[in-house]
Image (cartoon, rainbow, N blue to C red; front, side, top):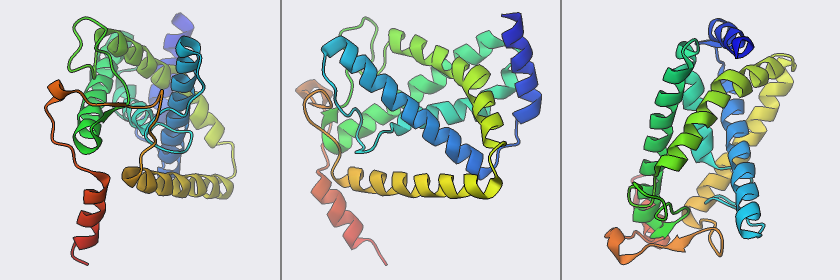
Length: 216
């Protein structure tokens, strides 16, 4: 534990506030891919099915990317106090998960996750177990993953790193755009919203019409 705290303090002073756009893009994409691997592996372990989890077609879950990147950007300054990082990370991740779940329900009328089987859940979108898991995940992002990734990024020639990040970012944006209109669904991926969700669903065709009618 002492060694972890020493690394955390060094990470705090060595990396806080010194991220380039390319490094932040890299962190976001790696956290997104790690989240996808976690979700796919968990579903395979619990349900015995290998499915492409998430709304996107590619191997990334942006909710994990956003949570991981924001944890690094906002919580590294508290690295010397692990309980604070854990608590703030849990709250931050829970807020992101709840907001994302509400958005997906309102736009598509589908659930990509459901915690309704857990006590004290809120609308089946967040729950104490998921909050705890994400709290530990944010600690891992701040203390272990981001320092290792940043050191790795900074050993790669700058031009090559920029080219790699730009290429992956373009693929992600294209995937995000296509999936916004035609999200990844199906068995083991998403389930229909229930009547008690009480949300007005916006069909993807309506989104296309709205985008088409926007002022040029």
